[in-house]
Length: 154
Image (cartoon, rainbow, N blue to C red; front, side):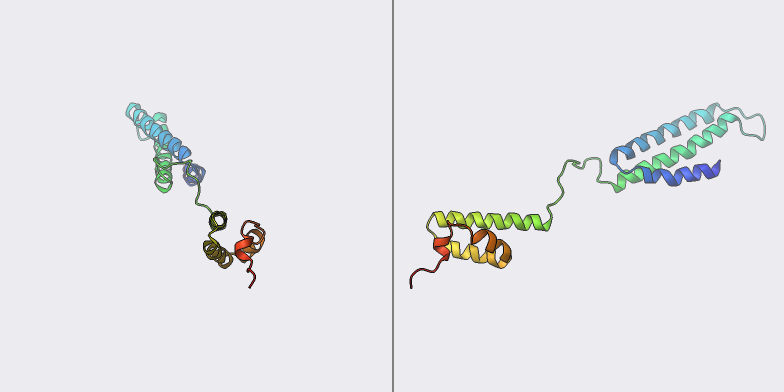
């Protein structure tokens, strides 16, 4: 029986992977511990042997302690009860770079629409420096930017 309880103690920590499961384990463990106190207090011992209620109280103590500790450790290691579980993960570097490139392209398009070729040349040079492929595919195919990027008659 002790081996089974030790196995339970080793298996339970692996099962509580979410904050909710950790809270359930903690609450269940506390309920087992409370029950063990009540069982132990009402157990009659008629000699050197433990009464059946006392044996059950010992089992409840071991299981309750295991669940309580498991739930508490899981909550301490986790994001915490006040953490926003709906928070979006940080964007990957590629996604961030893509957004930056698109923002620069929009800036160049706005400058071209305003006739500010100096800004268009500066911004598109930055785009070319950051990502040559993006520059060749996106920037050079924009007809709005062509008048500022095409050398005039000289």
